[in-house]
Length: 123
Image (cartoon, rainbow, N blue to C red):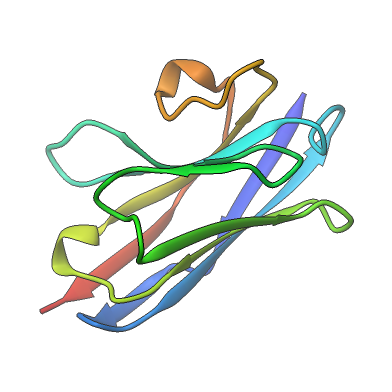
């Protein structure tokens, strides 16, 4: 079982930055793929970025060049640095984890989920 707790959300103006954190605990959490997803009101949850234990990462096209995913394996914390935020980035952001042989950005690729942290970007 893996437990995930997100933090760092808030309100920011367009063009601003935020850094989200996700503290992971439980068996296997350090070896798991981890990812950030987001869900805006009335929309499906979408994958934002994912990262392996070795640091290999992938991003959704909508955030490439603006967001950076990273992880501190010693502290077992996942980060999402979000720069040049846009109003369309407004959503609840979720941390997810699971062991898979590939690095998915689909919900089906993850078993463990946090409760989410809200990000609101005003234009």
